[in-house]
Amino acid sequence: MPVVTVAVAPHAEERDLLARVADAIADALELAAGDVIAMSVPVRETVSSGAAPDAVSEPWVLISIHGSDRGAEKTRRACEAARIAAADWSRRHGVGQEGAWCEWLLPQHP
Image (tube, rainbow, N blue to C red; front, top):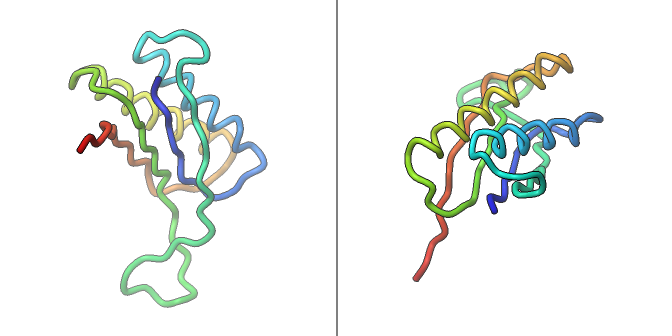
């Protein structure tokens, strides 16, 4: 069961973003309803190196999928689906973003 964290600025439609990302990943991995869990991590500020302290910087949506090894092709499809879902959500709700970064994190065993 993949567990997904999405780092995003707080928004009234944040639950919709989480649902869309979770559904996109589930579809890409051919998983059933309830097989992907998504949670948000609030991002309060974004700055760019070398910028003036009051400069506005468009944020990145960071998506981390925590799950077992499913092979390179499936993880690539899941990450791409999550990025597309985040970009579509941003456009739909008028939320500016520089881009979306997604990574698949495998369990770390000692």
